[in-house]
Amino acid sequence: MTLSTESDNALPLDMTIFGGMGDLAMRKLLPALYMAYLHGNLPGSTRIISTGRQDYDRNAYLAHVEAHSRSFIAAENFNDKTWDGFLQLLEYVRLDVQQAPDFGALAAASREGAQRVFYLSTAPSLFTTICEKLASAGLVDKNARVVLEKPLGTDLASAIEINEAVGKHFEESQIYRIDHYLGKETVQNLMVLRFGNSILEPLWRAPNISSVQITVAEEVGVGSRAGFYDGAGAMRDMVQNHLLQLLCIVAMEPPTSLNADAVRDEKLKVLRSLRRFGLADIARDTVRGQYSHGVSGNQEVPGYHEEKNVPPDSKTETFVALRTFIDTWRWSKVPFYLRTGKRMQRRSSKIVIEFTNPPFPLFPDAPGGVANRLVIELQPEEAIKLQLMAKEPGSGMHMQQVALNLDLQSAFQQRRAEAYERLLIDVVRGRLTHFMRRDELEAAWEWADPIIEGWSTLGEKPHAYAAGSWGPAESFALLARDGYHWVE
Ligand code: NAP
Image 1: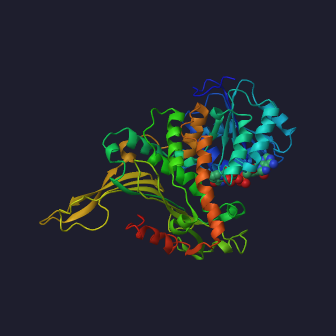
Image 2: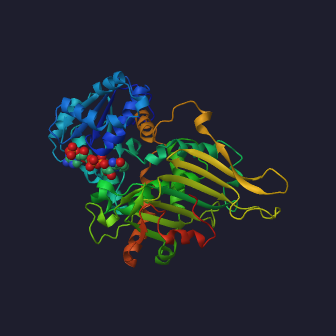
Image 3: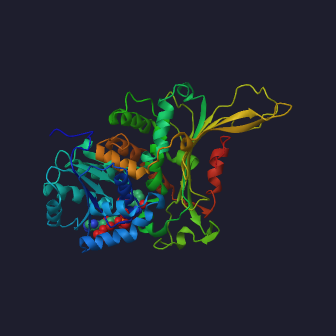
């Protein structure tokens, strides 16, 4: 069949959300769709069909949305008239994905000739059956698109299984594997910074760049997600997807165009060039941690073992720090330090590019440490700062680090959309650039699997770190060994 790719919203849109009563739908997807509607970014004839097993009628569903989703829309974006208009787009279909006949009700609610988007916001164990039954119900046509939420598998084998199953019914160009970090304005801006300017490119390599740090720190603990999280851990939940995707954007070669495959080809090359870990590398270059009781935001908070539904003997890591290398000419010998954790001192996601110090120490009063850093802050605020050395006013040649601040907030009057809103609009318009291709996902698992298996072979317990801290001491030692420290 000839597939439709980038589209111009000519068709009416039927967006079906599996897991339409779930946490993600309430907190992120419906508010993002509301924002897209508010700004005129949904096709004129749009319907959002939420599905779930609850025996609700449409009014009961709308009441659920009022109660559980509306509060996630910022007050300045909310207005009653638009909200009422948005609610008009919503339908509810009671459907158990295990029951083929239930898909008949979905087929009845779907419009012939519409652009059908199926957002699978359920556990991935349901993806296979959902795709099979959608196809059997005749709902997968050449215009259909499917959005897959992470985690896509727990290892390479399970990821292949899901990809094979979904691929039986959808062509690769119809599959949108979402990683919401790729929808962040600053992450997309990093591509513009790198490839829309020529001054950085000659510097963007070894030996001009001496190290790269990528941190995704969460202040929250495992909360109510222990049932899922304890079987996954930070490596599967964060490193294999979000952190590796950020690493790819930092490290990729310039693509030949913004075409989705051109960009994804370059990211794939990075993933395939990541150095593999043997047991000795795992012992030396990775740190696992698990939070213990501590203080977060002035409040005492429980340790991971005291959280609801966490087994008392759980060795699941809530923190990972590691050092890795990309074996290419550009990145030869440049360490990439990745770090993520729950219950860390504060929510903070950033990429820090450290440049090599001047080769000759001309200024005797120069402070030690790294002179130049490019800091790309992703959370809680988005910002890009270039740290340079400058002369302190006064006599003598005293130097201080100052930041050249790329203040995007004041440079642009335009609103900055949330990642889910931007990515949902991309799905509707058929833009695949900021979604993961199958081979990327599998290459990421190929790199991560031996590390996870190695931890299991080594059998060590994760290092304890106090909730509200920046993680275990071993994580600081990992960088100190090379003469670096984490930039908080
Ligand atoms: P959730 O609150 O548990 O929702 C999952 C939904 O799946 C429920 O609404 C449930 O609907 C539906 N479901 C389960 N079995 C079903 C069946 N047999 N037939 C039909 N529907 C069924 O989970 P979530 O937090 O929204 O997460 C959804 C997916 O997104 C997960 O894969 C998760 O890992 C991923 N994700 C979530 C977040 C987040 O912030 N929540 C972030 C990133 C990724 P009913 O009970 O109403 O039938």
